[in-house]
Image (cartoon, rainbow, N blue to C red; front, side, top):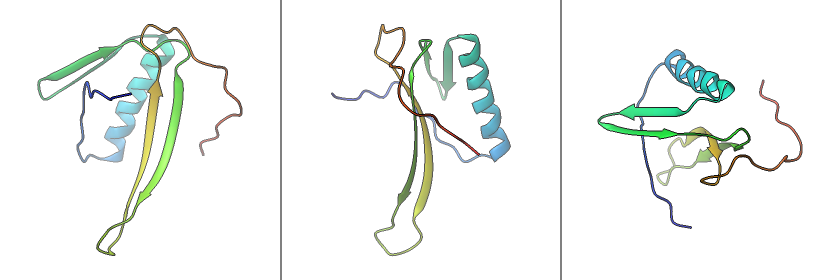
Length: 96
């Protein structure tokens, strides 16, 4: 299925600032509020259902020049448009 990017933001910032953004998102999810994202004249508002699919991915991208690679962790919520929830899923997640 082709992907359409509705909003994108990337900026280097202090980890405390990132934590504030993630905390705001967590609070909105807990309350069932819409997520309104805005930066650089772009904006999008999304309404996650009560049971979206949650994905965490940790990656290492190696350098083609033999230098140090890049590490990343990605957090993703996904749901079908118009859906009100996902599968029950199996297993649990631990973050320490």
